[in-house]
Image 1: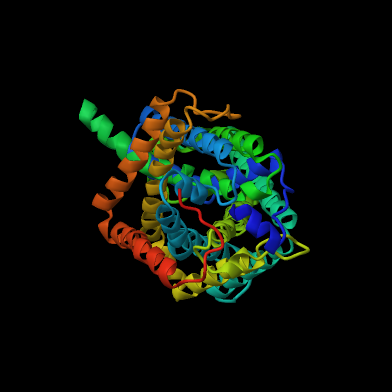
Image 2: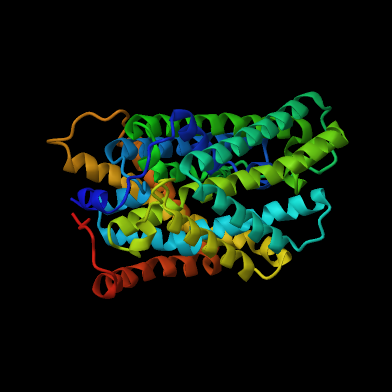
Length: 460
């Protein structure tokens, strides 16, 4: 067995994280800066209060279905690497390699670069620094990389601190929105068609930014190897964390609609700032700090979770063996953490200018999301695969997808639809990323043929 070989070579990952940590990691992987901006995008596409709320409710239900899917997968396969391990065991190691390949080169590293630049753009003016944003962004990635090298407990505490601060800022926005006077009718109402197809088109368009905002719960599954009692801890953390995010997002949307109204919300480029501005300069400063902290918290979450993908790949012999090395004292994959930090910094520096990165944010987001939702669809399919394969001999798991097969199928089909929509609507952003995903197959077989000797056999 591969686990037996590895145990003789180097120490195991230590299980130091509990249910509270798992829940905050789930929430930290979802909540970034999107909730401070996306309500206006949704309002511009849905136009009316009922449709705006419906989009967030439906998106929340789909996110909860996804949380249930990953909770069952975590209960059935509590190995380190999360989605990587699910793809490997349900389908084939080449599918899992494709996930790790794109995570390192696009989705995880690209998300970190964007988060770091966004943080720097908010932090530098508040700190009265005249350092270029790109320098501050690279520096914060380096700092978080170093913190996570000290141990999973240190990285977890840092992530939890930022997550608690993010929740505090969101609650401050909710309180401010509940007490300030609503804005008068300044933006003209948008003419809308209320035919059946028109409503469905508006709702479908509005769901895209909503699903973007809910994306990220899967990152907690990467930490399975460092969670206490992972079958129960991760399963419960996924469900509780997603429910908590749904509650926060709905509350923010309601106060945005209360204060600004649908038309003004659609016309706003920064609805959270507009609400806090009406509450006073102190509140406006709080939201500026909050957006920076929210972005930093997301970056901290990614730096904590992502290296575990490459650790799992190296454990299987499908990547450089050094990435599976654990420091004998801290018991964390230091080489994998450092490599992730270096790649993220390289992607950040390749942006060349903060303005260019800001303008390209949506383009990169579209490409990253297409990859994420490809594997979400495959995750839903993996539930069917595992259930069929283990029907005769599988014991009970701590949590199963409620309403399966219907809710699982809905989540899988919606995820596939997001990929198709992105390819059609944003081909320049989506197709290069999908091509990189496809390139993972020849890279995998080349590694198998010419790479380092395998330490284990992961193929089914």
